[in-house]
Image (tube, rainbow, N blue to C red; front, side, top):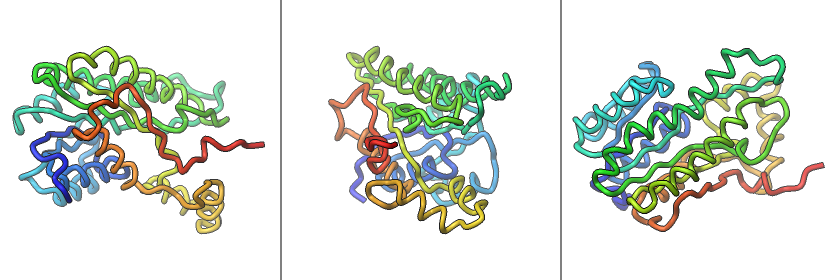
Length: 257
C-alpha cells in the first residue's frame, strides 16, 4: 500500500465485519490508526482486533444509538491516539416491513441506529475535528436512500434522511475544514448477504439471479466500498463535500418494467 493515510486516526463504527471491517483493514494498510467499534464484543470483534494488532488499533464496544457511548468512543480514541481525523459511520441495521405491520419498537430502533447513530458519532468527534480545523466524515448510506423497494419500509426513510444529514452537515462546517460525504452501496456480498444466499433453496442460483440484475453482471465486494471510503477520507478529495457516491454497479440507473 502507498501510505495514503499515514498520520491519520480513523474511527469506524460497525467495523468488525462486512463493509466496516473491509474499511478498517484498508485504512490500517494505508497507515491509519483505527478505532474499531461494535455493539458486541464477539468472535468477529476479537478476530479483527487480532488482525490489526494493538499497535495500530483499539476496540471500543459501544452502541451507536447511545449518545454517551459514542462520546466514550471518541474519548477513548483521543486518549489513545491524540486526535481524530476521520469518522466512518458504517454501523446500521436492516428493518424491512409492511408499513402497517411495523412495530413501534422496530421503527424507533431503525432510526436510532441508521440515522441517530450517525449523528451521535458525528456529534462526538466534531469538537476535536473543529479544534484542529480539519476532518472527514463518511456516512455509509444505501441505494435505498435513492430508490424505493416495496416491502423494505422504514429502512429507506432512514437512509434518505442520512443522505440529507450528510449534505446539511457538509455545508454547515465546510468553511471550518470539515468535509462530510456519503456512500450508497448496492448489493455487496458481506457475511450477512452470504447468510441470506445460503438460506435460499438454491444458493448458487440466487447468486446468479442477483448478478444478472446488474449491468456489470457481478456482485459488489466490501473492498470496493472500502476503496471509495479511502478516497473520500484521504487528502485526495479536498474539494468533495456534501456529496453521495453510488456503488451499485449501475443498477439504480436502469429502467425497470
